[in-house]
Image 1 (tube, rainbow, N blue to C red):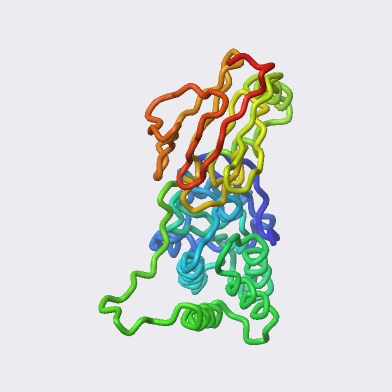
Image 2: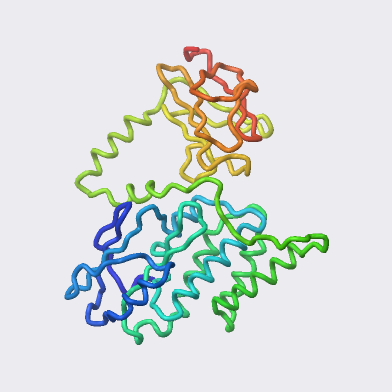
Length: 330
């Protein structure tokens, strides 16, 4: 997908790129970008080499966002509609790089920012193949437990000769009406917007991706010290399913994020819900300001609380029993 630019460096606040062919640069595109709220802010760093610095502070790229979010019911329709509408608006008179690593999202998923490459018109006049590949990526990485009809429609539509983003929006609207028909008694029009209740992490992937090779070994060693394997045998047992989750490290993050040590897709679970800590072979539970809270033996966890064998642990609407073998110190 990335045939226009080469990434020179990136951290949590800036993305520095260079045009592969600086002679194709069109300076008038910068003026168009300045007046568009959906474009990443940027500065031309080196005209001769075609080096541009984009601001990505407090943003997460679309690729990493989709890895961490599960869309339920109508959420996917609202998210995709806003994404495609913004893409159409920006791409109307500017060359957008349709690559999931270069489309950015706010931590709450309600605002989009596109990386515009200042190229002459001949370089970006025909982008249908690039856009189709981008939409196909969305289909492959879109996570849902309810709205599978979205994926089915988009798979078929990508193969259609009538493919275009405006037609895709219209098609999704028709699918939504079929699965969620308007109720006659609804006096007020539904607000079609998507916003996460809790922000998605914007730093986790960036730090992992851009650690210099010379520092890799030291960083890995520090990670192993923080999350070293425990010899004490302890686990959580989900009451409803009987599934067991081993607590093998000194710090176990529980939540809906893909990056969590124990990932629970239940809607009542926050993205980062709770943390279980092991200190001197003793286990503690800490709530991470979750929306539906954490309870230990039906008492709300306000600060770090000690876990004992047989205790009932409730996260949102999911119940667990904490187990620790007799060999471990209680």
